[in-house]
Length: 115
Image 1 (spheres, helix red, strand yellow):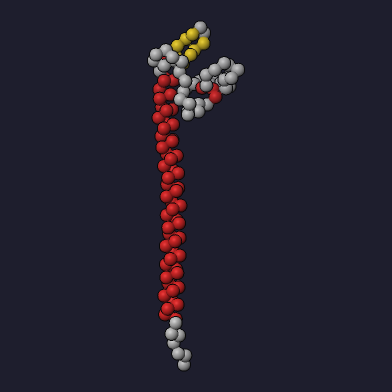
Image 2 (cartoon, helix red, strand yellow):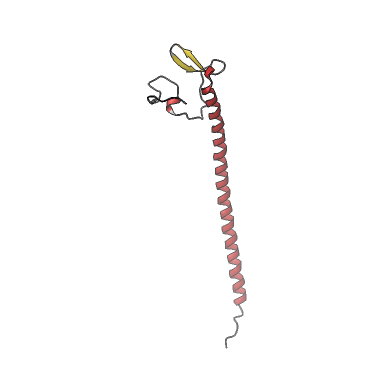
């Protein structure tokens, strides 16, 4: 016949308390990680939306036939005031859309069209 261990209940309480603290800590860390991930995604979404809106504006200007003015034999892009069009600095157009001297321009594929 064994006599019950008088400290067993206290140790069990302590183990339960430690486990609860460990779980709460792990949960808080997981929540912090999720929060950071959410903030990062939100930043990327906002930046993506800004770029998307800028591209839509750029495309609208590119598709506007009045935006293309002929100077000599070279087509030049111009805005509604006749100023040379330049895409916003943050938009990165593929090289074959970029303006500049032919030696700086990217390759335009044979038979390819802009749109």
